[in-house]
Picture 1 (cartoon, rainbow, N blue to C red):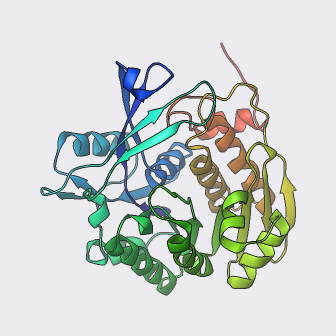
Picture 2: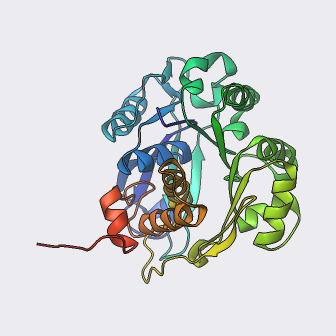
Picture 3: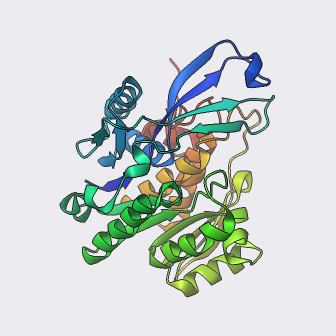
Length: 315
């Protein structure tokens, strides 16, 4: 397995019409979850990926498992809980602005994930363990599971990739900050949004953020700059990588997860930091072309065409 990741995935209900949810009468059903988004995106790019979580022993849990398995992701370590439900969320859309998100995930099956639920052998055989800051926000046991997974990875020379993915609807910044900074200090690759970096580090600008997090112990820092692209830094490289212009954005949710998948794909393929960032920018941009959290993630050939590495034949 090249990549292993874990965390909560939920069933997402997406209204057909824009405006307040109280007026919505029909919804499209799909799935949402930062970690499963990364897993699906990487599977589409041709990598072997494993994702695990806890799901309710209910129809929503079965649906999530079916979708993720169908995308070519290994789900052999997923657990079910007959006493708790699978989490849900609803999007509320207003034009082309970022949607409002309403969670129904309190005390969900995934929030009860604990260190005892980890398969150490499964994690230790991966090349990369990808973690987000959402899982430690779910509960104390879930937070403990994150740190235990990192410990296992470190003991077995597995690269730890971390995207803070700050969700202030799950915890406040005062509670989140020390936890996320501790995880960041243990990460080999930090994938962080510019606004998130300022919240956690209190410094401004991509270069200052990279300097701060590298001083904590990160080997590689990638500061995501949205449509402007990203800034990448390690001991050998410091560079800004330009993003891709999308004239009509359908949905921004999932773009950051797509970036993470594209970047990690480039790293696993042995590309330079700049080339990996180009992959990340490409997948992130393509994710915004389609409504839904994971529907817009490309295959490897589609990504190569989008970033200009391969010609396009339409018929």
